[in-house]
Image (cartoon, rainbow, N blue to C red; front, side, top):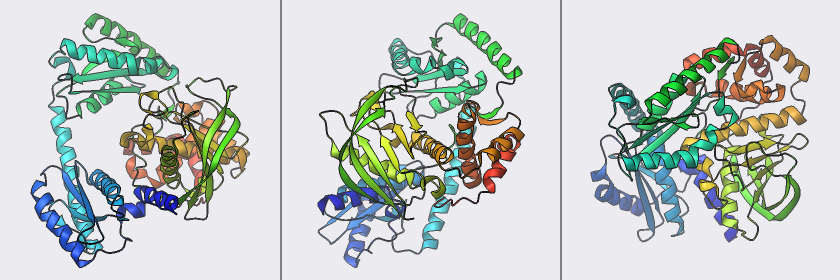
Length: 511
């Protein structure tokens, strides 16, 4: 029973219903009074003008209660952080849930949905205005070339980060064919930030990396630190030489027709999914410890597919609202059986799987979650088996250690991981179901005349199918997350593929 309650609590931590807490047992008058007192005394006076302060409150009696507030730049993040931390503390007092109690200087608990929606709308409109103002300010920022030079300590920091985290990616096949740049900003040993970007155009890569780097409040400005696998900061002649050579190479690729796709990396810069997207995940049940032989061992991007390993795992069953279930196997280190960590991993990816449209989930029977990735490109290694209704996830971990935090949990990486999950599920339905006629797919593909949604889609027909179907899901159900120019380009490049998917009348729940 205790195990079930623990799983239920962790499920609530991630479920959309649990986050909103609309269906939780209502607070009694004494609890409301206590929450109001805390709000007036501890929260209201600390509301910040340019941020969003959210308070969540859990209570069983005047003696048993817990609350947490969060102040972030946007409403969704404040709600997420406040709710998660409130739930964690409340569980220690055997309080089952937390309620949204206030937003900024307004108590919203007990108000009708229209009132809460009005408060949220006003805040989001203000946040949008603030973003526009920020963009206008960004135009006035000093260009990186004119910024104050980095001091020796900062140059050393940038070099360490380059050698440790950037150089390996810069030597990858994808980076060598593109403009790969690394920007670094630094005030001192404690306040610094960096960003890398890859694109088919050098100016585009530089602009995106610079903007992302200076977005951090920890730095005033950022410098172009490296191009490809070479540090160019402080060497104007080397930088000019590398840029000239790179521009010629990219121009040649464009003229040859090699760049005939909409996005180099599909939705890399779009937040298609978030942790708060609707999910159908309902319950997780532990089954047993299980050793599975001859599982593919992939730890780097170019791993030898013939390498196998014994997959030591905890086995779980994930249940969903639409009568769908799947098995989830979470690998543990030899001699280090950390059940709590495995359970959290299974819950996390179950929640993500529940966000996928039903037509993709219904044909997948198993998920294997590995923990031995040694290649940190942000999203890690994901693959589907040709002969089995399952797929594998080997997400990177902090410092590339099995015990490290799994990085798909990071807000900025969550959407990318979810997009890859759509891609892998698309492989499963193409390889093993025959839902879409191979001849119809081939005809639609040929009719689009060698145009693709991404560079990876050009690899072969199988990858083209997975990338195109992923694009279709986003275009048809998350179009507000995609720029107008890209929407137009997708429709121009792959109209026949999109039409084929439109005609399938897929069950898209919960999207």
